Amino acid sequence: MIKTIRRRFMWLATTSLFLVMIISFASLIGISYFRSSSEADEILTVIVKNNGRLDIKEAKNRLGDQYSREGMFKYRYFTGMLDTSKRKTSVIDSGHIIADSLNSVLSKDEEVAKAVKNGELRGTLRSSHMRFRYLAKKIAKNKYFICYIDLAPLMQSTMLLAKYAMIFTLGGILIFLAIMSLLAGKAVQPIKDAYDKQRRFITNAGHELKTPLAVISANAEMEELLGNDDEWNQSTIEQVQRMTRLIDELITVTRMSEPEELVLSPVNFSEKVEEAAKSFKSVLAKDGKDYEVKVEPNLYVNAESRSLLEVVNILIDNAQKYCDDHGKVLVVLAKSRLNQNAVLTVSNSYQNGKNVDTKRFFERFYREDESHHHDEQKKSGFGIGLSMAQDLVYTFGGKISAHWEDGVMTFVVTLKRITPKKLAASENND
Image (cartoon, rainbow, N blue to C red; front, side, top):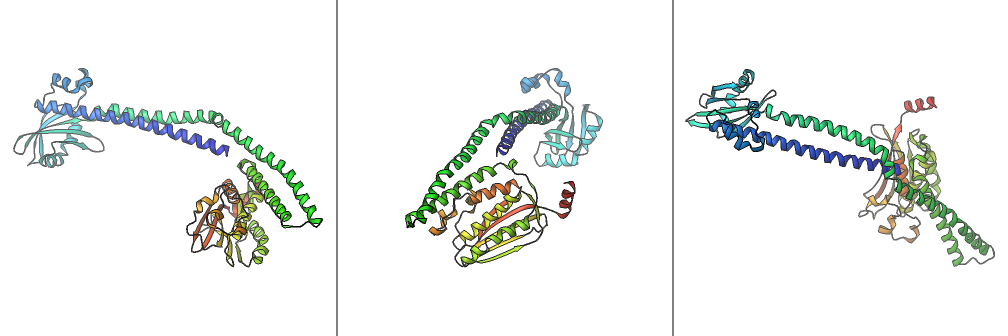
């Protein structure tokens, strides 16, 4: 659990930093792009207003702090006369642009003429190798004075900013991850210490409680041998057994809550299901319930043998405990559709499960009978078993779920299947 908290802490911290950096750099790039676009529009306005002349004084007034005298030479533009009827531009001044860019823009005359004729006097031309902004001013019928400005020099700073932002983001994330991998352990150390103390307390308290319970149980059994076998003595024996079972489950949950304490290896899932299913046969027969087991042989998974058996026991025990009177319990183990997983399905008849919140079944100390069972004889659990099963299945790298449909409650465990080829290779390595 501590490793999981550490990984989540690192993931959340890294994701938060990444989002902050992305939002910050995206904002800067957006502001830079907006300023460059605004600068291009202001320069176009000055040139068109002055019939093709870039007036330095007016440009200074319009650009404000973006103005610099040397910066006036960076603008690449040309002017012309656009005839929308002929859809052709006659170049007036091309002294501030290179021939290749000029020809590329003039090849778009038909597109620009159509847009201007429709009243779009300002627009942008885009292609894979150029990006120009234009502004047109009507001179006469179908005649427009037009100016084009190359956005590449203006957007250069924006492109550099985007490039360096990407480098800084990736570099910053990598450095942050390196630092977090070193310091995350210290960040979760208080949680680890508290958790270790809790585990030791439960284990020690469990063993300490077993001593007086053993004495009480022995005294009750002695009273029974002496002939004092009344209902109060029987109640004492039952409660001692119940308390002992609770303590054992608490200690088991504590022991199995850390994945690193379990050594995983290839286990014959089919054999474990058959072993567990066999032990419940007489119990279900005694209760008058139908019991069917279908197990596909030799399905191997990566797990811990005793813990995997415990998972199957928990699910079948839960099914027989909450199965309707004269109902049916079905246990099926088979390969998934793509043969990649081994799927264990344990289902039981349960007519009153329509409004049951199956997601809560795996909460520790939650008992499904508290919300939808009223048979006192069935209330013998503590709400620990299914939580334990979930922890173990997650440790095995699998999934567990529960659902109710058409009067049947079903639990499904999915574990990654070890193919015969991989199993043989594993045995050879051993």
